[in-house]
Image 1 (tube, rainbow, N blue to C red):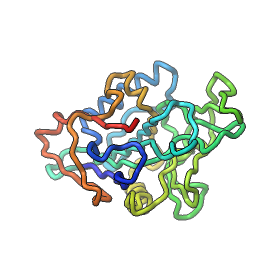
Image 2 (cartoon, rainbow, N blue to C red):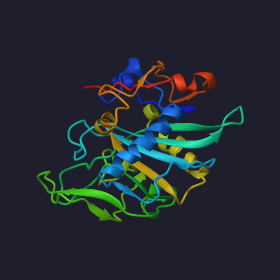
Image 3 (cartoon, rainbow, N blue to C red):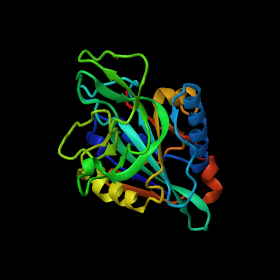
Image 4 (cartoon, rainbow, N blue to C red):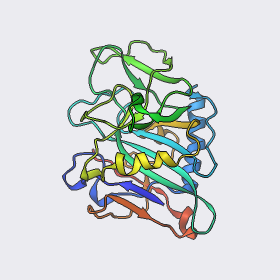
Length: 273
């Protein structure tokens, strides 16, 4: 099952084209992707902790997909053009293990060029737990409490300060935007709740995290379109061949798939240029 938090695409200058709203991901391809991308990151020494795919029922695995280069800023209208995909292991109607997918519109880039601002680098890290962001009651989030992550820092001109990544605890969380419209200091931040995204934090993200069984053992794969191209899983234009059109009126899309067709769906996602 896929739950797609649909933006108001017709009036949006963001990343999805209306005629090619997608289904992301097929469980078979998703698992293949996870293993290949983990190996890809390991080759560049960009992994932290035990990064195997969590298999237990109720557990989640998390992938962020950046549209822009690894070192980017939210300048102009480029904010909230990234994707957060959370897969959760479930039992389907046939009693077989399956995956539910939750897709959110996020930003993974800093909001401005400030001295020593953090950029979360491409990596796979077992560094996250579920708790309130900044310990504010009600702001449930996926927080970097378990282990290190890798970041770069840039100066006020946007130049990288040190070619070697910084490794440590930096409070790089996955959280709501709260009162900010374009808020990121290196965190992965969900677009502010609105009717256009189905109030995705309140109606989907928060309830999902309350059901998670691996609350203290979450792996986050930080990826990008370019990285996915490098491991030959998608083209520059997108993520699946089989595209299902979706009405704008849907704020949450729920689709059940017939198991015999599961492995025939290939991913394609059209990105606006």
